[in-house]
Image (cartoon, rainbow, N blue to C red; front, side, top):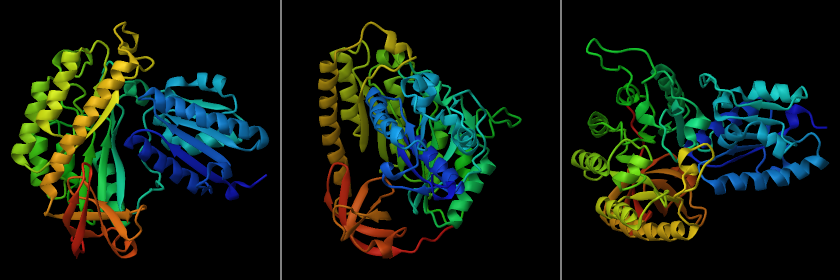
Length: 455
């Protein structure tokens, strides 16, 4: 049997940016414990699946992966199998009945407790950690996948009760980190050479509601806007992004801050889910399509060039053809730079899953194809504005399909390729003249490399 110091681990991550950030923290814990990363899961002694339950196909994929490793465990008795994340939280002990080879089932709120939970596993226990807890502060050092960009959680959980969404059930209630802890993590990232930070929250506009402190006039001292002002001048960091926003809480004050603060990228990710008011009410989203349009109008008044991305669901229970066409009209009128679309998928424990007015898979598939066709057309139209322009691109990596090129993103989050040596340019801000446009990416010629000057 291998000793702990020789053991190798592999993590497979499904789903959202929050899951990716959690995986990086858990990888950091494992490396602190003496584990080494293995690219190939079949060479690993510990396998962790960090799971997503937003849609059924992601959940089924987890079971498929798990089945293969459960068989492997019959030949390799010291293989440690872990399911973390939202499927773990949702299924709990039922997962052990389905896959008895599992050693540890842990919900997302327990990510920072991985070492303590594993110690119990190594003592011979089969462990389920899905109880609601106050999340321990991020004292772990993540094993970050990038050396240029980094995720920083600012708020965990979600208090919304959208009728289609399983997230509040699996990620728990909102828990904001303190501004001081967030700033300290970003300062450390700046010292390590990271150039871009993405602030993460399931509902980032809710940040601070659970933290103490108000002004004499009754204003909360800890809003997300206040946080942006507080962290904006961290040395070494050149760009700040954030996700995900909720239209119900999105304020003009936040838009004004983004326009004023030069490090905040002109890119907003604000899901609208449907362009029909009756459906928005059935979804319990708490806003109308008119309010959503006003938010976008306000952003474009302050920042005419800002990129707007969003999420939309088609085929929600009871959606009529006319209601779907209202969504198409919203997409047509606004012209998103990127739109993540999905056909509605009933999720366990959500109200909409029990409704009798479910649509057929054929109708959902047809509507998904139609909206995606429109999304591609509008994104290509939005890309036109970049042609011939000089854009500043933060170089993140080599283009794996063409090793003579590097890739990075514009301030507006457009993926951009250009000729260059990754060894010289990684982490650099490069001025690039755009010579070729596509719906979701650009190609250009480098004009000038700028050594970042930080505040």
